[in-house]
Length: 417
Image (tube, rainbow, N blue to C red; front, side):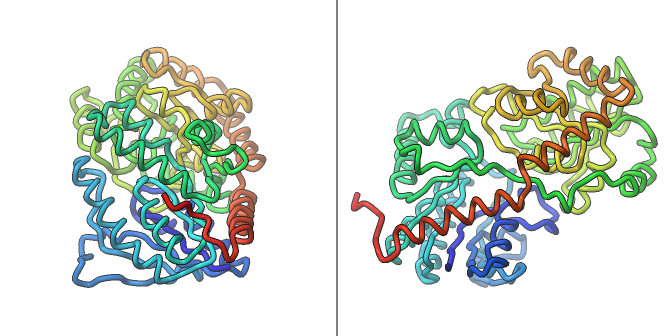
């Protein structure tokens, strides 16, 4: 089977940028199983330019086609929309030229459906669409999309993507429910969450000891870690406020916040304003997954946070799965399926999103309870192995693509509208 795979923000474990490696992991497994994969993505390196055009690389047998399109997390919403549009236009022709038995597109952004639908129509192949976020529900709930025309256009694009998809993959049950509410038959919706890379992440006493010896400010002190995007949705500033409360209860606890994004400098500034920066709160740029694995091995508690908006509770953050795989106790500051799992498996904490004093008290109590971090971390690893092993999830992903290709072989599944 030949798969044309569209993902605007493709990343590999060696990339020194924030981003999940789901597409890399799934695509390379497809190739290992005998399929051909052409992956289309954006090239937003500083040296990339339209004049140089497309470049092609090989990632473990996956042919990756890179289109120069400027993008970074510091862009305004309007500039991001222009970036989305530029990629949609440029990738549509490439995807159609490549052909393929199945066209697969993963959001965000939702505009990724446009080149996918075009390519599927041109090649008479089925299109499988993956929903990583319930867009536009989240930006509407956050007030990012306000104008009725913008909301209407976003809703139309959402319906267009679903209507033209042979199958839809959602990264959580909550997302899948949202897709069904939008009109997609439940039998065409498949839940395949983000996965745990059990070989890359795991308990590693030697790596943990090395990290702690390299960081003079850490030593054997308790360590709380956040690794990921510093965006408006993430609300990483919450952890700075919690850290301020923790410092009052236990000055020895250290917070390490790693990543990049629009709120990066604001988070640093707030930590400095509270007198925490480089004392109990340390803020660093992004590192490759291989280095992140070592940091998580050294952590006593890993975290994933979002702003206090219920529409975000269905998220499927990569950092959650990396933390579980590393065998590190985990904390979230929201309800939803991840919170339910942490409680069920006794693998961490569910922090109060509004009461930072209560959240701080929970963290200090847990970290200072003998054996708590070790037990919760062990439970986290068991959860990762039982529910989120990458190989098992990749097999389910492959099955959806193969079934879609077989079902629509020789047909055009797309409606005329």
